Every structure is written in structure tokens, then in C-alpha cells.
Image (cartoon, rainbow, N blue to C red; front, top):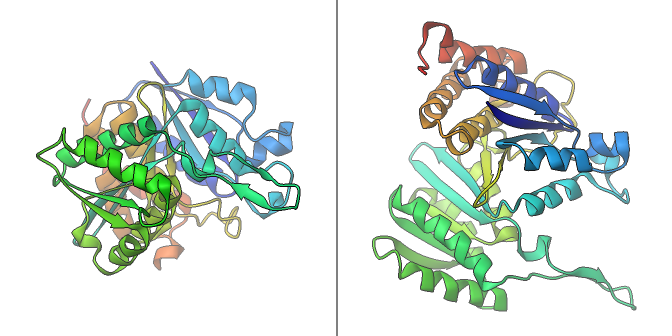
Length: 334
């Protein structure tokens, strides 16, 4: 039996995670769910956004399903919920963040390096009060994420757009050199380089021209949100963070949405799509992943939540997904 650690986190995280677990319980997979404290909820309970017990549980799991972290109540605090998320990514070495963005005429995949760059570089305060964050990359970090992107492209339309800022940054010049080196091993995949400001504009004006977008941590954070915006918004966007071994982290791109937390109106589509990615990459059940993705699409039409102009509650959206899955009539086969 596979053990799944669930980290509901903060805000609407617990609400959308509950719908994902409800769907998971109805699917023909043998899993044990272990729910743990994380993020702001963990700070409130034990003073640490990533308690050691939570980290150890994640290390021993088949996959980690994460709701959301953060909120205004922890803004300006000495310890922030997001610090737990950054640390968890580093501890599990989930360096490859996959963020699909699909819409009418658009089907692209952002492959974002997740454990390097500004978020993990040296930082501090100088004697004169200057604060600094350092963007750092080793060639091996660039190589392994580049290979992930080229392998993904081989299974898609065989085109990689590598995004950097090589006209200004030394790390980007390294990035471009390593990507070109890796590209020699993939002669069947076309690669082009794009500066991040130009790529951002093209994602807005011509998103249909992209297949796989490969980029570093900070640029990927921004560009994946742009890709989500042009294909329906953050409320629909899922992600998978994968390493070379051990558990992956599967989470919606949206935040904790404290303004609607507790109202029962949060859209769980992104969380359910993240569960589909878990089924595909964590449990090796692409058939169930495809069935769940299709059920979410059906529910988006039949039971839209208020953010989509409808009136369905979070639970009613989950009910619609379960109805579309039709597990009671074995529409999802074992």
C-alpha cells in the first residue's frame, strides 16, 4: 500500500485538500493517507512551518499532496509559512517543477528549476544595511533540469524554449551554454533561446506557439503564472515537483486565498488536477489521471464555482467530479 502525506496548510488549502482526499478515497488505488501540520498552521501549533515529524513523514511517503500556505496573519513575522515550503522542496530535492497550461488552442508545459537560484542562494545584510539575495547555479543543476525538459518535449511536440536573461546575467549565460550542450543529445528536439522579458510578452500575445518552456526558479515562478492566466487563471492551475528519487510534491498554483477561506466557495479544480498529476507521476496510473482530468473538465462546465461565474460550492464541485468519474459503475477501471 502506498502512503500519501497530505499537507492541507492554510486558508482554503484545507478545503480543497478535503475534496482531493474525497476523490482519492473513491479511486481504485490502495493508498494510506497521513495528514500532517504544515505552513502557518504548523507555526501556530509548534512554532515551525515544517516540523521535523512532518518532514520525516514526507521523506518516507510515496507522494506529498499539498493544499496551500501563507496568509496575512503571518506577514512580517520572524517565521513565515513560505519558509517551510522552500525548505521542503530543498529537503526532498524536487528540482523539476512541471506546470501544465492548457486552454483553447494552447497546450504548453513550463519546466521550472525549483531548488536553485535566488530562492536558495546566499543572502544577508551588509554593515551599511544593504540587503542582498544571490542567484546561484551550478552547471549540474542546469543540466538535470534541461534533460527533464528535453525528455518532456520528446513526449509532446518536440520543441523547447529555454528562457534566460543572458544579455545581463552570468548565471543566464551559464544556463544557455549548458542547455546548448544538453541539446546535442536530443537532435530530434528543436530548441530556441528567449530572453525572459520577450518570452513574457510572447506568452501573453502568442501562447499557442509554445510547447515546453524551460527556465530557472524565479523566472519560472513568474512565467508559469502568466501561462496560467492566459489559460483560465491560477484557480485552475496544477503543478508537480519531482526529483530523481523519493516523493514528489503535488500542489495547486493558487495561494491560500484568505479572503474566501471558510466560505465554502473555493474552486478545488487546481487541487484535483494536482491529484491527477500525483496519480500519473507518483502512483504510475496515467489512466486514472486522464479520467480525473476529464471529470474536472466536466465539472467546470456543469458545476462552476463563483470565481467562474457559477454558484457551486467547493463540495458541490467535488460531487460533480465524483459523478463524472462514475466510479460506482466502474468507469474508472482497475
